[in-house]
Length: 167
Image (cartoon, rainbow, N blue to C red):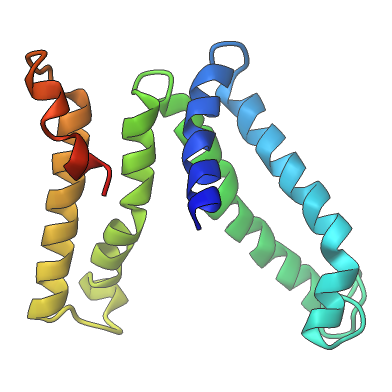
């Protein structure tokens, strides 16, 4: 888990460095290309894990089948909203924010997702008092950490909150 957290967090530092030399769109496209290559290499294994012997693209397992096309459309929308747009947006944002703040804000996505899921037009679930308290404490934590990384501090006070920020 430590290695995964280090790699995940380092991505924002690398993004900050990369946008100094390439555009956010190029950086987002590069991340997606790398992901596609990894998934294509893993394709046979994914099919065996799914129990089908080969990863299918539709109910008939053919690229040209209407159900397959509908599934590809869904995959394209999912890829755009969950990968392409966020990758480009994060790269664009790191041009103007410290990479640590970008990482913290991206880490707060589950909190905002929970808030949006509780809105009336997604009324499958309602947040109870415990859920609301959890969201508020999570947002307060994000605000505290983000504030600590961006607020100017006197030299002695900069190190006083280091243990809290490492949690």
